[in-house]
Each structure stands twice: as C-alpha cells, then as structure tokens.
Image (cartoon, rainbow, N blue to C red; front, side, top):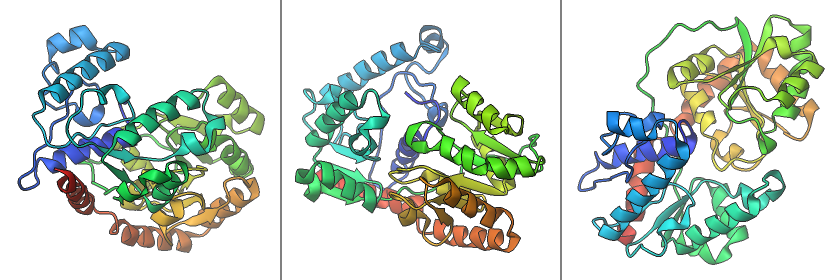
Length: 351
C-alpha cells in the first residue's frame, strides 16, 4: 500500500535480514509492488507485463496481492505468518501461527483524529485477537495495547525497531544555508499547525532561515493558507524525499523538530541520530523511551514550549554538538541485529 513509509521499510528490512539468518527463510507474498524498499525483489509480476497491468493502479495492486497472499496461506508452505498490516482477509484461511506487529494504538486512543476510526479499530481488533503472539515496538505501545485489550497482555513481546543504514551515496541538492527540518505526515496528531505557529516568529525575524518539510505530500490548500497567515510561506518548502535526499536534509539541518503528540516508536529519531542531526521533540508517548537524553524536549500542546526548545537548540552550537554526540550513542541501543534476533525468538516460540 505504501511507496515510502516506516511500516513497509520495517518489513522489507525484516525480510532481508531473515533471509540471512541461520536456518530461517522469509517470503513476501506479493505479485507486484511499487514500494521503494522492495523495488528490486523478484516478485512474479515485477516485470513489463506487471507494469502494463498494474502501474499506478493502487486498488488493483492491492486486490491481486491480497489474492496471491491468500493463495500462499492456503498452500500452507510456511511455519509462521506475519501480516504486514491490519487486514483480516487471512483469518478464515490461516491454520498456522500468526505474529502481528502493533505499531501504535493511536486510532483507539485518539479516535477523534480519524474519520474512519471505527472501521480501522474493528479490523485491527480482529487481527490482534487472532494473533498467537504480538510484537510491540516499544514499552509504551505495549502499555497502550493492554489499556485497550488487556486479555492480550501475556502474548506481547517488546521488540524495538533496529536502525539500518540505507546504502545511499552523498548527492548534491540545492538547499538553503539554514533550515529547520520537519519529516513525515503533517496531519492531526502529527501537530504541524501548532509547530508552524511556534516557529513562525523565528522565521520572520531571520529571513535566511527556512522551514523544510520532507515527505507528507505537497502542502494542502489549508496548509498554504496557514503558512501565508503566519507570514512564512515564502520561507517554507515541501520536498518528496528519497533516502538520498533525506540523508542530506538531516545532515544539513540546524535542528530536526518532531512535534508529534503520539508515536508508537518514532523512527525519524534514529534517522536523525544516524545522520548527526540535533533534535527537539515532544515529551509524549514513546518518544522519551526512544530518545533518552539525546534530544531537547518540549510540550507539543504548548507553542511557547516548542518555541523555547527550538530556540535553545538553534542558537546554541555547543548544545547542537552535544546532542549529536548523545544521539550517536543512543543509536547504539537500537541495532537491527537485536531486532532480528528477538523477532526470530518470537517466531520460534510458536513454530
């Protein structure tokens, strides 16, 4: 379903890692994919014929991939099934153990942000209920699962995401000399509007300072209106960021700001740490658990708190350098080998 995104990157990395692990093999049951992280996979229809039939047709891709996955499930040539999202299509066909990774419980805990919350919650509950084992990507997510589905407590194992360094080269990209970086979706609980309001004063004082938003698609009409009203539209820019571009953005930003109100893990934190970028972020949900002492914290509901944290990092080169060093140390807590080893332990507990 995703071309880019944390969940699909997680499963692509997991699949690659499992196929290098002793006595373990893994298969992604897809006919065709336009996902950036599996573009070189030898899927049956990742070829000219597949492109003719599927290219750009997301509903058709989803429909046929689901059929192919169901066929593989019914064939039963596997020990453990690990669905990549909360679609209950497999439930009436599966006869083998099921492991489900729960990335967050934001729909359940913040339903006001989602017009389809009721439908998503029902589908997700069906998949989680069916699971023989659950992987929570943080202790905070484990606690959130238990709040909503306490009967699943004994089946949860916490397995942190492990960071893998994408094999990308340094590229030349035209970027402002000074900029604040925002990464990912900007809607609802991602808290972009409060963040933009908080930093608008800094941008208006320093016309050489810019705001760059990586990913999350082009600015919407309402976002353009917001940035115009705040007087910072001309200093704001959205970029569709590949791994190569994202690497340069992190490396060259004065500060990466992560104002989200709720995260199951917060993978951009590790991306920033890996690319020596100073970070200011929310003190909510899983973020303190992942970031530790390597960031400048703020209250995401308080624009003044965001502003103070951003200014503290932005105008203090010594603090920037200290946070970069602490981020590098923090990153060592989240190796991909640890993630892979613990995931295999969950599989073997069932197989």
